[in-house]
Amino acid sequence: RSLVLISLLSNVAAMAAMENSRMKLSYFDARGVAETTRYVLAVSNTPYEDFRYPITFRTPGDFSTIVRTEFNAALAAGKLDANLGRLPHLEVDGQLIGQSKTIERFVAKRVGMMGATPVEEAQIDCMCEHIKDCKDMYMKAKTSDETKSEFFATKMPEFMAKVEKTCVGPWLCGSKCSLADASFFVFIKEFFD
Image 1 (cartoon, helix red, strand yellow):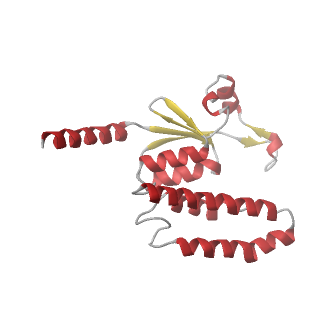
Image 2: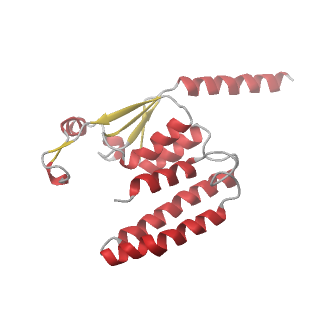
Image 3: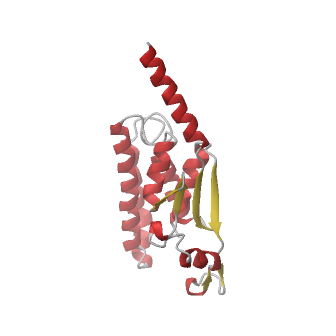
C-alpha cells in the first residue's frame, strides 16, 4: 500500500509541477501556423503566454513590404536560433521547442488531447496527416479558376465524406475533443484563401 501511496503522491506532485510550469507561445501577430496550438490551449483551458511579434505592411497585403522590427532584433540577438531563426516556438521550463506541428503534438499530449491510448494517439496523428494531404491537393488545384472550382465542387466534399466515415463517436478520434478536432476546425475555418 505504501508503494501505491508513494506513486500516487509522486503523480500528484508531477501534475502540480506541470500546472505551475507556464508555457510561452511566440509567433507573429497573426493566426497562421500557431493557431491550432492556440485552440488546443483554449479548449483545454490551459494558461499560457501568447507572445506576438508585431508586423505591419507598407503596402497592405504585399509581403515584400512587411515590417517586423522586433522579430528582426530577436533574430539578430540569436533568440530564435533553437528553431533555425523561425517562428513559432514554444518555451517550456526555459527550453525552446520549434516547428508548429511538433508544438501542436507536444501541447496536445501535455493537456490530455492526444488520445487515451497509443492507438488513439496514432489515429489523431493520422487525421492531422489527412489534413496535410488535403492542403496539398488544394495547393495544386488553386493554380487555375477551373481546377479550384473543381476542388471545392468535388474533391473537398469527397475528402470530407471519407473523413466522416472514420468517425465512430461524437469526436473525430476517441470519446473527447482532441488535436484532430482542433486541427480540422482551424483547417476549415482559417486555411482557404
